[in-house]
Length: 453
Length: 179
Image: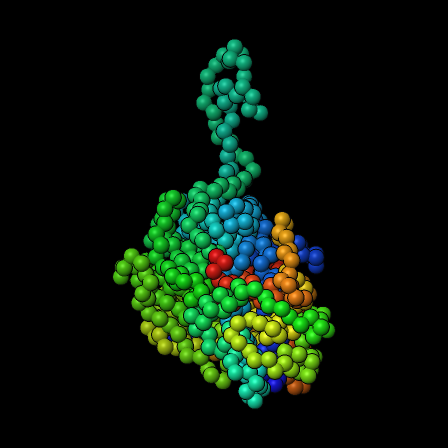
C-alpha cells in the first residue's frame, strides 16, 4: 500500500487491481426495456446493494457471510428481496403517463432490525420497510394450521402458540407514500444527517419532507420564473451535506452549484455559496451549454469536498473555494470533437453519475462502450476499465483499456469510432468501507472487487 | 458558409427531436426541452446572421422573420405572436420541388436551390410570401396527430401547410410554457 496526501491528510491508496466478482441480470442481448437498470446504491454498511429499474422494480442483494476458507473471495452478493416499488400511472389532468422508472434509491441508516429505503419515480417517493421473518407462530387455539377456523365445539384445551423457525422470508412493505408534491420530474432525493428529514428535487423546486409526514412538505427552493418563457436553467441534482443537517447543495443545467443553509431563511432561493467555473472560450460550440449541464453532485464522505459530473468531466470542489474546482478529471475528452454526432444520436443528453470511495481518495464514473473510469486523487492516476461478459471469469483481473483519439492506433487500443454508444454506464456505486464496486451496464449489474493481496 | 450548413442541420435535427419528445412516455421533459431550445437558439442565431451577411446587398431591409438574432425574452414573445398570424398565400410552383425527403438532405443542398434567397421581394417582419415559407431544412413529414385530433384544412394557397404548422407550433419558448 502506498501513502499519499489528499487535502493535507494522509490516506492509504493502494495499487488497486480490480477483479471480476459477479454479474447479475440476463445474458440475453435482447434487452427488455423494463430491465434497464436506472439506479444503484449500497446501504451504509455495504452489506446491502439495491438496484432500481425502468419497470419500477427494486432488487436488493445481500452480501453473504465471508467464506473463511477462501479469504481471497470476499463474500458474494445474492438476491435478498425483490419488489415492485412503483407502477405506471396516468395523470388525467395533463393527459400524461407517469413512468414507473425508479430514478433514485436512498437508504436510511439502520435503527432497528428492519431496513428502510426511499425510492422515487418522476412524481412519487415511497418509504419501504424491508424486514426479515424467520419464525412463525404455531398452535393457535381457534385456527387450524392452514388458517381455517376450527369448529368451536372441538376445542377442549387451551394452549399458548409457540414461535417455530421457518425459512427466512424477506418482506418489503410500503410504509409511507409521499405524493403530489412535484409538478416537474423528480431527479434527486437525499436523506438528511438528522435522520428525520429528507429532500426531493425536481427541475424547478426542492421540497423538504419529514419521514413521518406524508401530507405536507416544505418548499425550500423554487427557481420557477414568473414567466416560463424566461426560463434559462433547471435544477439537475441535489444532496444534503453528510454531517451538517442545515446544509445542502443543488446543481443546475448551467454548470453551477449552489450551497444553501436552511438556517438563513425558510425559502433558500438565495444561496450561501455559488460554485462556478468560468467557461473556457476556446471550447465554445453549439453544444457548450448542454455539456456544461451537471448530471450529478456528490459530497465526499468527510464533507469537505463535493464532486460534480458534467458530460465530459468530473470536478472536485473544495467547499471553501467557489470560483473554481480544485481538481478536474477528463472522462472522455476524445468525444469533444464528436459532439454533433452525439447530439444527433441523443447521447449528449446522457446523465452520468459519479461516486467516491470510502476514504475519498478515489472517484469513479461511467462512460461508453461499457467503460468506466477511476481517478486516484492522491496518486494522480486514472484507469479505464470495462464491464463485459468477456472478462467475466471468476476473479479475472480487469485489464486497463485505452481509447485512441486519433492517429495511429496501438495494439489493444480501441478507436473512438469503434466505441459502442449504446453500451453506456450511467450508474456506479462504491462500497462505503471496502473496495467493492457495483457497475450497471444497460441491464446487467457487475460487481468487482479489489484483489486482496 | 459551412457554419450555415451546420446550423441548418442542427436546427433540423433539433426540430425532429422536439417533435419526438411530444410523444415520449412520461411527458415533455423540461430539462431536455430547455437544452434543445438552447441549441436551437444558437443554431438559429448563427443561421440568420450568416444569411444576413450573405444578403448584404441590402435586398432585404429587415430580418425576414421575427426571429432575429438577439434572443431576449421580449422578442421571443413577439415571435410567438407573429406565428399566430394566418399563413399568407405562397407560390406553390416554386415551393413544391423544394420539399426535402428528410432533414439529412439539407446538408447536400446547394445554395443555388435555396429559392428563398432568389426572391427580391421586400421582407417584412411578418410572415408573408416566400419568406414565411418554411426553410428547407424542416422535416417534410407532418406532425403526427393525437387520437381524436383532426388535421384542419390548410390556409388558402399554402401548399406547405404541414411545415408551416410546424413553425407555428415550434416557437422556441413555447416549448417551455407547455408545462
